[in-house]
Length: 382
Image (cartoon, rainbow, N blue to C red; front, side, top):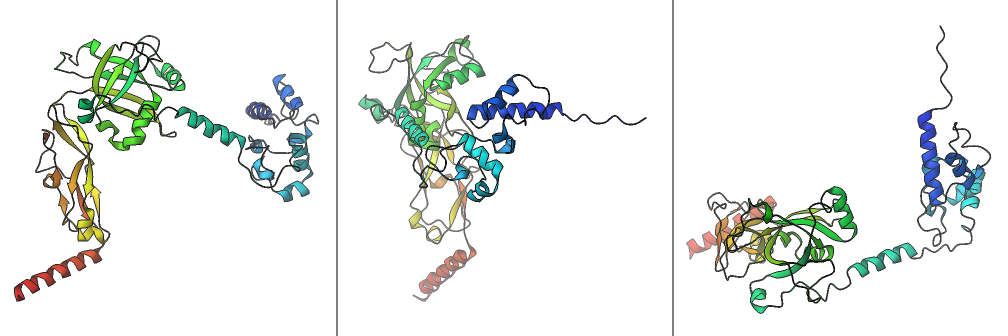
């Protein structure tokens, strides 16, 4: 028995072609007749490439891309990627495609000018950041400002109607970052195993982004006074009575992998005596001969867990003294400078905690050993 011949029309190819034409029609690249034929659910693929649409049928479907800025650029590749002026002159099908879809492509200027779309995006970004200077997060209370506490505010989030991934996306579209306040606070009688201690909140995006721009990786090491206002739109100047005021530390800050913006931000209640991770900062690197020759510290721990006593300002950094550091030195806790009232927590084992190791070229090591030998010889000779 002879094998049945293959059907000339592949249903998957027909569906893909329909989707491509509909996308192209929304971008303004496909002819209206072709788009109407697809919407009428024509059965075969060759009807899509009929004489009703000669301008787009000659071009491959992969080239039907959205134009970058047809009102500002004259080069053919700015409308369809990969098209050159030589192709326009030699290929009549491409020429017909451009005449049908971009009738003014030859009369536009040859000089690349700023796109209106780019200007609109820049204006929108400036509008989003408007007002950041008025509320810089600095606490107006001199005593709390001395303790290095900053302030932000948020709003309560409904457990029923504003929970879940879909509701979270809706909140982010309104420039509100979902999160939750959790943790215990013995000074206020709040216990972490109590269900009511977990308070869902939504924080304005500009507050979180402002602090991220200011402190970068040190943002989770900051202590904030978080004010929970009852309604969206309330702030410090509105006169609204806050529901609660919490001292918190940002925890579980999730960043968007593409936009590099906060996706979710939770808050852990803070009280004096609670361990907190503080970033380590290197100082006096110029006082090390090895580091002046190009040596560097390969970090093992970028933060150190400390406890801050009550009434002591929360430090922004814990300094690491680099004076006299040599190649292959292992940096430990004895080089860390702790301010008064700050101590290592129980998690930090002084004999096991490593800050990093000094690495560099062997040339610098040989020069350093030669200098030490010369100094020893001079001392013995003297």
